[in-house]
Length: 337
Image (cartoon, rainbow, N blue to C red; front, side, top):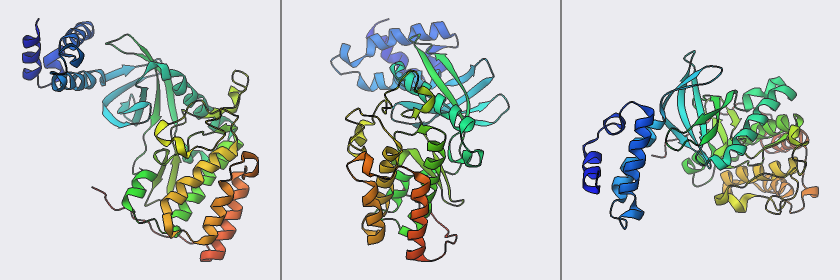
């Protein structure tokens, strides 16, 4: 096959099956052959659009169909979201329950997916079961071989979450700043999530806007993406206590101990959580809340608060002084589209 023939095949294909067929081995060979011919590096950039189409069709084929594991099966229904290092695919498990299958884009990040699975197993084992709704539920973890490259990837299957939005979406919906009374319940629940995790011996390591999900109507919160976590049960294999990696685009959101490769602590998570909440409110935060936040953002890790439950009690006292007795405040998240 020459370049013109490859381009003609791509132009005629409407579905992955049109281009690759049904046999996995033949499909992988077809993909590799076409990729060599239409790769932009081989044509001086002239075939960028064709290569992008090839990639999209191959991606759709790879992540369609059923993955069978030792414990069950997952029928994938396409990419649901893309995270910092992994893609999440909507799925139904063998009992027709909604799930998300999380796969790293680079097999070099398998260790971070494994770190997440360790944390999500430790939390229900060592934590207070009343607070399990604040973290994702791990269905299973398994290895999945890429049919094109043969690369072995660590995959985590997680129970799906419906009706949730991350804090980056909340900020986009309220660009002038969120009412502090609305931010208050989110902040409270984030402290509960961290208090639960820390008592169970797990640091999250990346409390960033995309990793904090809220349910507007139910005032729910789930802290997701535990790939950067420091589970206590890792101490015998990794006694450093360091956060294993950083999200580059948020490099300025980490406290000094993380880029310095020093041991993290609960104060590390509380620093990042505080930035999430102060950013949401912007200039609308009253001075007492700004002063409260300032104490959580001190440069010295040892001088910052390190107990989420104690900090929550102080926060509740502050909220009562500001707004009176706690009561439910309906929250609406307007569309940003």
